[in-house]
Length: 68
Image 1 (cartoon, rainbow, N blue to C red):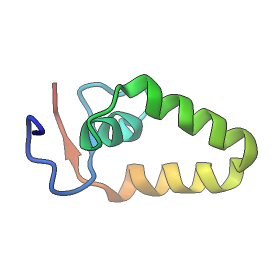
Image 2: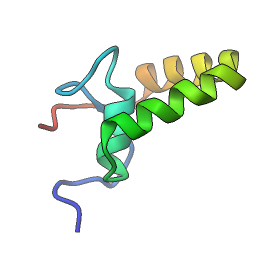
Image 3: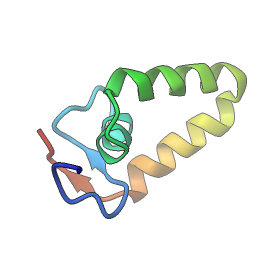
């Protein structure tokens, strides 16, 4: 079972490197943060514009949470 309320995607401000999007997805899907960040880097190599637009949109739209 997950250890916090994860009914929706969110931006995790507590464990962020840039804006916390990857940390929020990692918390939501209960995965290590490095796995999500690695996937984003690999996807950015193949689809740089789409990943950049999606990352910025997620950073602006998703609610902020401080999950330690």
